[in-house]
Length: 427
Image (cartoon, rainbow, N blue to C red; front, side, top):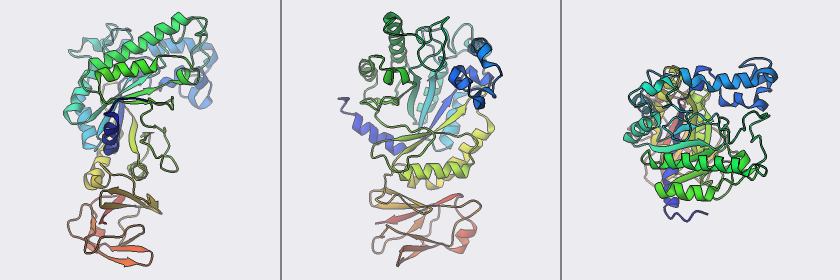
């Protein structure tokens, strides 16, 4: 386990944030594809291959070269880190994780260890006065008081030390035996350590190191000297939260279920990383409320820069609406912890010291109800019950099945927000 004495307080800080965004800017946007199309086990999946081209068994190598050469025509001319950070701030997000390197190996910073990067002379964007998008994004988000996270994939399918050239690559894993070629593996480990050193030492304060793609390192038991790497990283970034998400070991400081919400609270710090996809705002709010009521954070993913470097309008629209909801209801989200009963029916609970919040989810097409009855809350004698976003206290009375709160008709007709409504109880 880590002996970093500041880690416990940093995890409390992390759990206060509740809502973060993961964003990316990569030449893969020119093809409109996920890096997973490079992996042959995904390519043979009809649901995946239909998105790209037929006859994968014959032209996968040609396609990989086409994919990896997209950076030679990548010039996101309208990329504006201030705009990205402003959209995320207006959305109510409190931390930012940037995909510095995904499994395809493209590096969105000025690494000195590979030329497959945004600042390469082969990439047209290198002609920009400041092509290091990582530096510019971190500065823009840090200015707005965001926590800063580095997403880094151990797996690097572009590296000749991970996928050996001129050797079949049948799936996502290493395509050589590290016992027979220990020097090749050691060169890869040194490469990973070197890139982590660059990101931890050259880009200002970093709060989270989000490590992905560790299948071979953990299930395959390939030694990448993780403990030494984390010690080095924390030497540059004291209190660094490390998310070794495939490891389930001492360097998984919080858990990261992907595209799912645990059925029950996990009892440890955790974060659901959830793709925005085509989800409507009502669904995104429901997801946030359920996660927070169970003691977790939401890291919203799937926000990639378009070929011109802007964020897609549907992404901006969803984030704007999330921010509008959080502007009213953020008190019931940020800095809260689980209540003894996190849910009953369509009501989810959060707690902050002597205050309990009951968040009533609205059904599809439904609005604010005239009356809300909640259990597991006993308001303090003489205390006021309030609906966040409404100044006047609400009438309430004890009922056989809990507490019934009455909402004035004027508020029902003109509610402070949509989709979910937060009631505050002093207990």
